[in-house]
Length: 260
Image 1 (tube, rainbow, N blue to C red):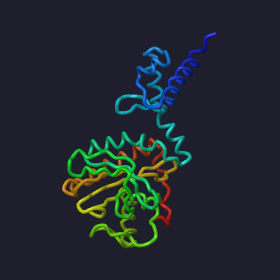
Image 2: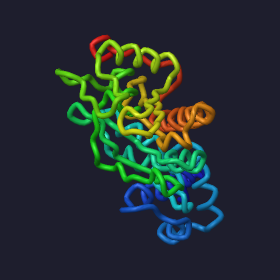
Image 3: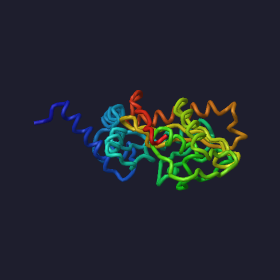
Image 4: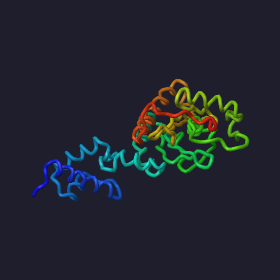
């Protein structure tokens, strides 16, 4: 006896989904149709339905990967696995919008570590920061993590990297209050002379900040007249990435007092 049409559609969609989930890397539409034996029209219709519901997503080449729902499930346990992969399209869009270096950063052993990057479109400012760690207090990424309770300052004095580095906890506390107020951080020559950066928080379901997204470049390009637009673009993509991780606006908890 043949399956009812509704059950048959579910079975077929499940077969497609299983192929995407178990594939070692992204798969093409043609590969999925061939692997499941489904007609191309049926494959197209079912993939669109799976994509609408967040079960599959397409990468920059139009290939299929597991969708945001799988990412949200993985993040229930606080896992960092898959964050870079999910974040990459948002980093790419921010890089295209600004032309500057874009980084994703997390707290690591009392420092901020850049775990993903989109290179600047310009020769000046095209430094590879991936894998590098820098002090929290003088990086825009680090200030975001501090301001929203995702990191705590190590004990001891605040290292002075440039004449503009904030080296007193009082001055840093005032700056972090401003970060929370406006929703993004700014550093201007505090990590490296002439380097300007803005960063915005990335949140997961429940409102916890798990990473920060930044745009950086030389002061000659990221001057006061341009900085607000760059910050707005950074916030937009950080918010979109947060939504992909399961965050819903309005669920942000206050930053723990001990981590400000």
